[in-house]
Image 1 (cartoon, rainbow, N blue to C red):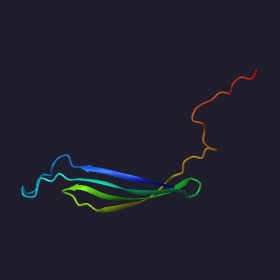
Image 2: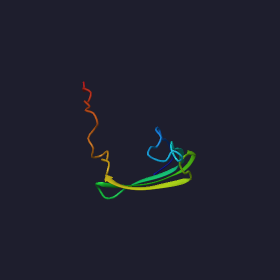
Image 3: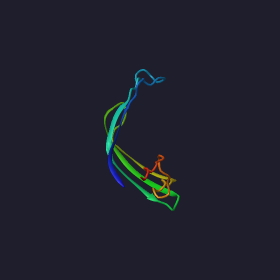
Image 4: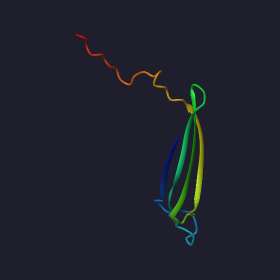
Length: 98
């Protein structure tokens, strides 16, 4: 399990095109920061599950709404090999015995 802080910056580099001159050009921008909570758990011998919840409070907006948004993710993936069954990452040689 972990708890952390997440954030992002969105800044549109080129203005929108194809709309009325009175409405455009839009060059949107927003910053977001918030908490994150994640949990990895076993799902049998060969699989693991992962839940992640994160929320962003958005601010410093331009031509874009601000407020809060939240994301919930659930992932199933192959389990990481255990240290007892995995091979060593590098070959080693025992020192000579004299």
